[in-house]
Length: 481
Image (cartoon, rainbow, N blue to C red):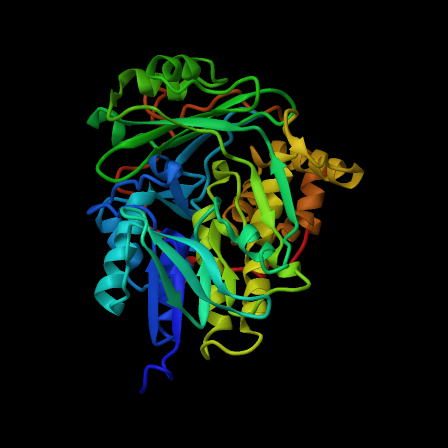
């Protein structure tokens, strides 16, 4: 095959979405190049340009299944490197507005680890299995082509400022929430409308190690934010290397401090003492890292009237969620599946537009859940929920109270969060009837879960398992509640 006949793709960004896009395109494009501006670490460590890299990342069942379908063996590699399987709701102590609900199941399993571990595992596989080139320290500063078609990218080396060009039949922007795609497209006369929802939530994370006697029986802990007032919450989850990540978060007016003393003091102000009790016995394993950019952004590339062919936006560059809900990595994987289906026959006329619409659909359910929750916080900015949404929120509050006792309702709500069950199930006859009946008795303020709070109902050592693709059910993301 001559050089002129070879098809080429350029992927901007070596994060989760970019790496998965590269895997997808190696099956339908002759040559794939991933261009990354950051120096890539030699191990499972955070990258400098990824401020969320120091915080916990969750693989929901649908995301785990998608990744293992795209890159078989990834989940086994992550578990072998120490990623933890957390069964929901059995293996997590939750404190919500109705106390600590009973822990049934597990009905779903999520994988918790650091982002650095996921990216490192995928980078190793990408280079070893596909021979994809991955030049780091180079940034994309513009698009080549014009209003009708993108034909490549203009690059600049960060060390010496040297400019370069990379011709391509397809350019995939997976550069994250800082994407310059709206500005680049505006230069071609194509403009993107954006929807923003900002809950005002901010958080701070510190890694720690628990005493072995405590760590063996302690599940994850989640103290939820209140939805009707300025509030505080927290999350304590296991990750690789025997560590726990303690993430504390709050809405405007209750933002966690970034220093160690402030982190500890904030934990003591949570509505449940369990996380503070655990941190009092833990050994710090690193500094406190704060994160403030939690607004959900949705540039509507799929609705553009005029858009050039040969250009697709993926991952956080296409839809950024409030990271507190743990959906981003999984939605990026679903977007990569959509990209694969659109380009199964390689670059062709109309493929980019179809791919962009499919990527948008793959994020719809997660986006509606995240934005719906964000809009409920009193300090939230942006569009406020109208009367229908406020009525739905009151219904969901009712289900929340019922689910604390009713395992059937709890199972449905866990499935919706895990993106394995359509939100429409929450409006099914059985769930509506349970909501009408309401809680039979007032929920207890606390259950004897967790370490020092007595071991009854706690997880059994070695009882968690990594999610398996065969067990991860998917639903049609076009369904609407």
